[in-house]
Image 1 (tube, rainbow, N blue to C red):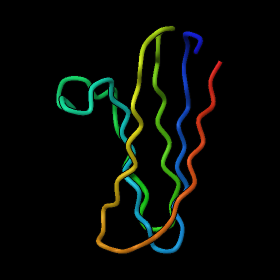
Image 2 (cartoon, rainbow, N blue to C red):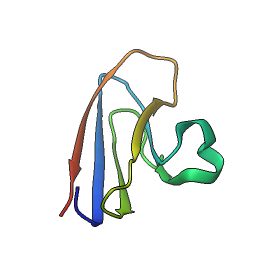
Image 3 (cartoon, one colour):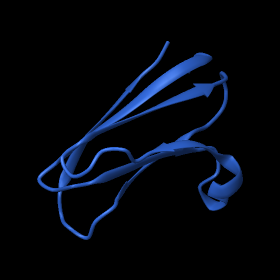
Image 4 (cartoon, rainbow, N blue to C red):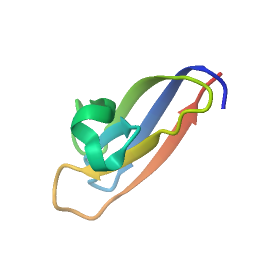
Length: 79
């Protein structure tokens, strides 16, 4: 992928309350997390911008803030 800002968007559906993370190392979230988004409630849309360099690996994690089964769509846009 190219260097630049990547916009990650998750749209929750059916009661899902998404929490969105982007990290370089999932085993070390505390030190490699580029940020998180958790401003909306159930059925909301969360957006996170990650500034990445070419050759870097990023992991996008979608978690659920509540104990319900729901669905979501994920979109990543970049340069």
